[in-house]
Image (cartoon, rainbow, N blue to C red):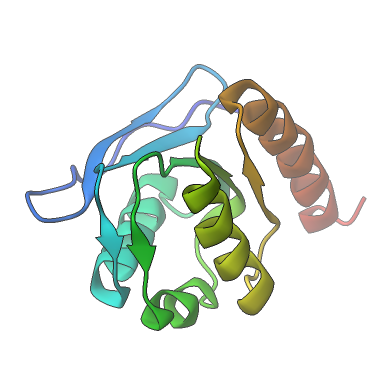
Length: 140
């Protein structure tokens, strides 16, 4: 997988603390702590993923550590197809696990999505699943 370059930077009020690609082409999105994720904020995050994907499907790791709530409009946003080939949600607390599982179980997300407590396990899963998605896209 070729390493993609960056895109637009998250602005104030975006709910995103940082956004960057790692050496393997995984887009790391770190959400602000104490974030109450709403539909508008989720849409802004999806728009940034699409911008950073630059027409390609990319693996996305979302660090949701410290997130406090997710409203129902987020589920609607996440049903839209985006540049995300797969999404790994990473958190440390039981609250984050419950929030992630609520979104995953209720939403018909158009790409593989899973929650992890370990960034290392999340990255390994993302790289494996993204290879599978790329193979499927090529018809292999």
